[in-house]
Length: 260
Image (cartoon, rainbow, N blue to C red; front, side, top):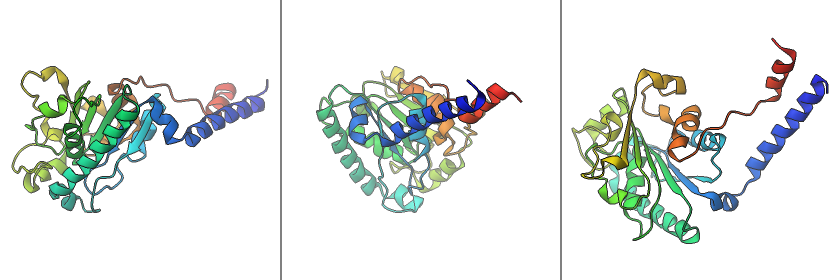
């Protein structure tokens, strides 16, 4: 088989794989599990494509749904409009309740950024008795670091993973304007980590920033953890998914066969 034939075959295989992924309907993917992603205040689209792509490329086969909770494109308005945040949390609770009614044994995870972590947490707290999600991943959370997660954890089978960085300048501003749960002058989870509820320390995993994370694109800033590489290599494993190697492209094949 010559080089041209190998290129054509590789291209066809890649094209079929991409087409199959793109054509997969939500209804079919939902049969294999569900992960909700919530952006931060203002809904500026951080992670909107990177989170689903990162999870899928890691090998996640369930459905990834973007849940929009904001009321404006102004982050300050959404950060302070706690009433709307709680209303949207109640709607998300209802979505999860209905999903678990259809697929009672399926795994449900939530990944949330910044103020979206408050909405995610309240949604879990408001679930019906007996309804549980699995894991909650908090990215740059603007909930207060002392927020009592005991109620949420009672509606969870897994753990809370809280990624935090002392270099998050956005959350330094949150100290002044107020956390998503309405506290001022306090640290957010995304700055210092989450204080575990009494007797539940094993259910909370705090992951702090250090220079080694830069290899995955987390430089310590507020939205870094939503980048596709970080999601694929780090966050996916929190959902029980082992990252798969990136498939070779036709150009990779050329380089392999022809050489430098």
